[in-house]
Length: 122
Image (cartoon, rainbow, N blue to C red; front, side, top):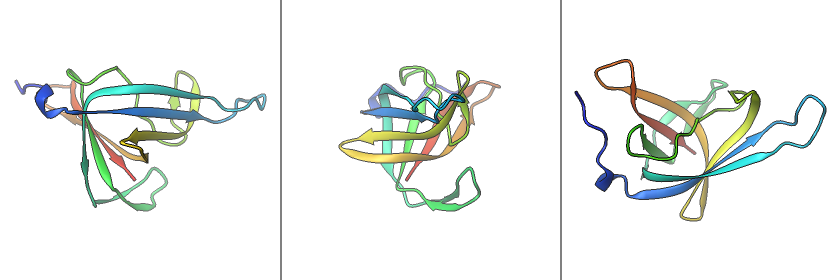
């Protein structure tokens, strides 16, 4: 069994902002804000492909442990759905900088349960 990422390594907090497209009646989009706690954000310069297949250089990676990070959130890319609403954009605000979620990588331990997520930010 692989242990969760220890809380003493999850030293950061940030805000996750999810923006949604206008609904089918044309009402303005809404956004949700959630405070992420017990996460870790590290600088990065890795190249990845976003959901539309375009190469993007990441500037940071957010580590979200499924046991020790909070709250339970759903990370999403453009056009994904959360609770029946289509996501336009998801951003992370960390130390005054605004990052856009570009890549979501669930990582598994020794079972079918997700151990942690690595979220690519640009």
